[in-house]
Length: 340
Length: 214
Ligand SMILES: [Zn+2]
Image 1 (cartoon, rainbow over the protein chains, first blue to last red):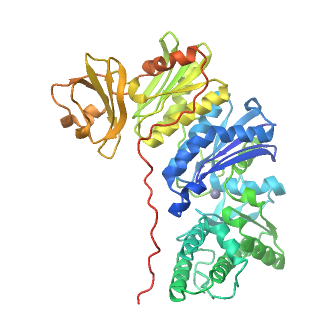
Image 2: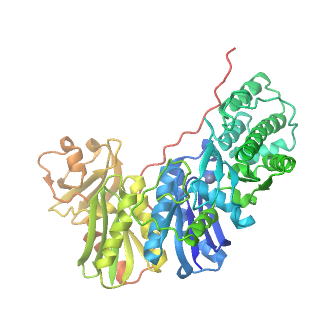
Image 3: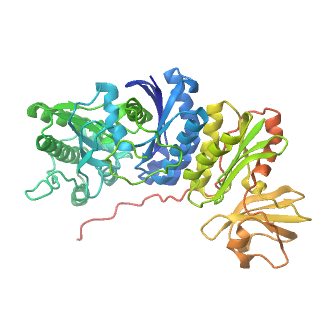
């Protein structure tokens, strides 16, 4: 059996994790989130500088947590893309160097495949066929997944504009809640009435793309509403906006399950940490007789364990290592778990 | 003992193995302004493949230089040192460009955005810098020689009477030499902090724009 070290630096989290044979041995995370807060979003250069500083200390921390030494590492996996170019370069270079210095194979993997693999650390192997909803600050996608590392992944839909997490950040700013918007809207919404404002459900009219997402119109609707009602209760707006997002995401995810005739829905990515999305997905899956799998909160957001998890699947499948020449790929659709 | 010397502060992606006697036993340097991420690790692997002897320390040029490439070199050096359990030392990349001359000299390299990184040397020692400035703002009083890639990038900025020295990019033998004392003494590993010399570009957003016309 092989201990796989996973390295993730696609956005503002420096993540390192160790997985062996489907079991998470330990992981560590450093975040530059606080440094981005006053800019209302991730600043690529700030993120990259933070990754460089945090890289080796995060590897050390993860080793400590896992009770491992570098001698125990048998393979390295790294997010090769998609993500912020400046940030990806740091992780890819670090991973190449560890692999080279330790004399172990290296695997360049797709970030979103890592998100899907995160769930296997909690709930075991995925079934033969499933639908994955990936929702984060950078992605809103529905995928048809068979074997995560053997079979090409089918993209069912994406967002046409903003990602769901991006919409949370923008709406939080509009209504004066702190960055990042996901957790702050989730918190405010608990004190609000989700039925207070009937915000639109984008792309749900007859004739609209059946599985497509769009969140920029919803954000504009919130902006218009708060402009017209300056004295409105922020908690009500937060709850109503969150309800609209949760409604659209879960409606389309279950529609995808029906269309692909699968009975398992996997919801992953940072936005899958949202309590209302989790609750509504559970409710609707129960009604539809679909099994819902969502990793625990800490494995939903970006982390190194998920990259180690997909690396572990590749190693066990006997995948060919990526070599040392490949480059980071800032933009690429998920079709193969292994990118390079 | 061998020292692994790495510099990615310029378009020359450089890796070399140097003995503590100053002999370069293997070196790879390839010009690729945006190829640091692809080229560096294979270059190190090539150097290691042919070399006999243990690598006992890593020396890295900490810039100044364009950030993305610079970070590739520094994180590579830091990870390699960590993985092998050997120390890593940082050296100012401009010091590794040969600017030895009679009297004062300057080293100028590409800082992009129509600017150069520069430093001033006297008898082989850095006496000012590194700084970032427009080529015409580099103080040249008393300077007799100039080195570095900035010579060719801004040929009109440098007076004709300055001696153009041949060295353009950091030289691995010089990089290693600058850290010999530390390597020989087995000095503690250093955090490889890059010389960015500029703050990140980032703008604090103003109030949200109104969306409806009234
Ligand atoms: Zn992600």
